[in-house]
Amino acid sequence: MSEKLEYIAIHTSFDPQVDEILFAGQSQTDPLHYMGPLIHSHYIVHYVISGKGSVTMRGVTYQLSEGDSFFIFPDESVRYQADQDEPWRYCWVGFRGSRFKPMLQACRITAEQPIIRSIPFTEVSEYFEQIRQQLAVGSLPAALQASAHLQLLLARYSEEREQQLPMRSRKSPAQLAIDEVVAYIDFNYPLPLTITELAERAGYHRSHLSKLFRQIHGMSPLAYLIKVRLEQAQLLLAQQIPVHQAAQAVGFHDALYFSKLFKRQVGMTPSQYQAAHQ
Image (cartoon, rainbow, N blue to C red):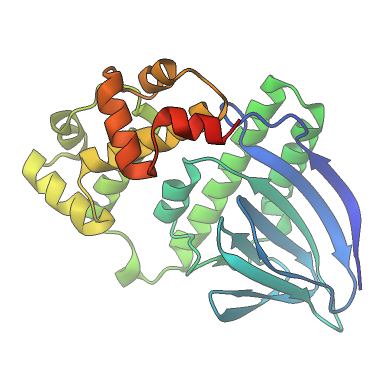
């Protein structure tokens, strides 16, 4: 039982500060070929071009066929297997980055809902192909183009998810407003954001925004902002960026305050974290 690669492109000089896509490929599997159980440190999306197979995540097994897609999530165990009579042919993209977790959650693509059904290949093939071609180029402009095509691909999946959801399960105006606040924080975390500014963007009073945000995300907007900043700081520190520069780059201008928060969340000081990733 094997998997015959038709093509694969791998980012050989991945830089987490600017790059998001790790690899892209396409293959035809043999009958009953399987992968896993595996746990990855990144995301992978597979699109089934033809044939059939199954995917098991969190104890649930999903049956997939032509036109279906499945997402694999970081730190989640997954096993997938080709059908005996009609083994699947699929293409895939592997990617990573802190912005994808809230983005996929907003799209309602999660480890509890990892399957997107019945999208014609003609509607996504160009995205997969462009990602592969740009990844093979290996330059910064090409990497940015690949990321742009990945975002278009995710937009198509988001559109399909919205169409497949029953009306009662679609997001309320309040949920959409909170999603906008999350996206704004994710893209603007280095700026001196305030709860007043975030409330104005959402169209709510600051106290009401905090209440809604806590109901949906289990923390206040400012706590979420600090969480995003510290996650980004970890990426910079792992690249051996000086502590004071990493702090300023993610929006902390008081190094002592940054170190205190970092140790509280990560369990070690920024310098200790940096030393552990040398």
